Image (tube, rainbow, N blue to C red; front, top):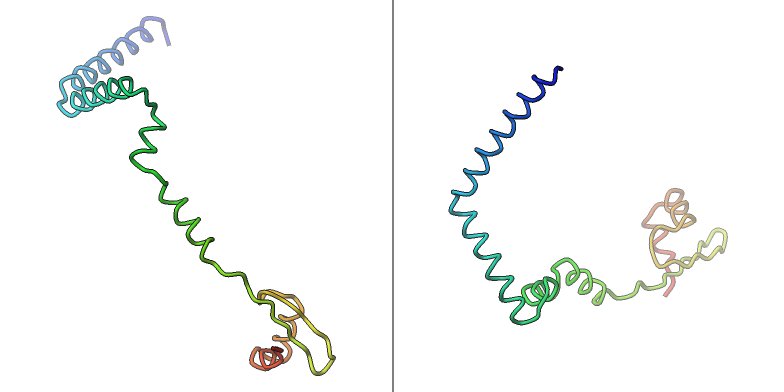
Length: 120
């Protein structure tokens, strides 16, 4: 591309951006947002507050963190279950159903049978 063609392309892009800039300057919504931002900055300076302070005032506890804490705070610990295989007298202690040996037993003898081996 020649220097002249490059110059004309950049000049055209600049003219398009200037037209877009002028359209934005005339936009009422943008003017309101700029006015709000200026008033907010003035207010923040008057009270010596930063953006983090404003966020903390408007949203004291972020919604995601609040749910996580509530869910973990109310969850009771899992109960230890003890299964004894009457065929081999092997004992398995687990707090969940994802134990390897327990899965093997359920596959071999059936889930209902293995659950009957649960000891109190």
